[in-house]
Length: 78
Image (tube, rainbow, N blue to C red; front, side, top):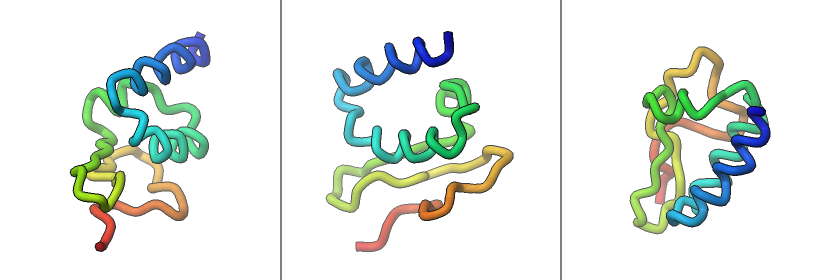
């Protein structure tokens, strides 16, 4: 059931212009497939893109596990 819900949610997110953030979201989900929409909806993990050309970043990470290797907290440097 969880997989079906994710499959339904991805096209909806892309339809609302959130496809840009999907790469970062997918990287996180690949490491922590147990995450649900609740962690993102409740603000445990916040992903952001300021549309300034610097790309997506993790604004907030309060999940019990560490940020995946290769990713970092905060806005990327110019």
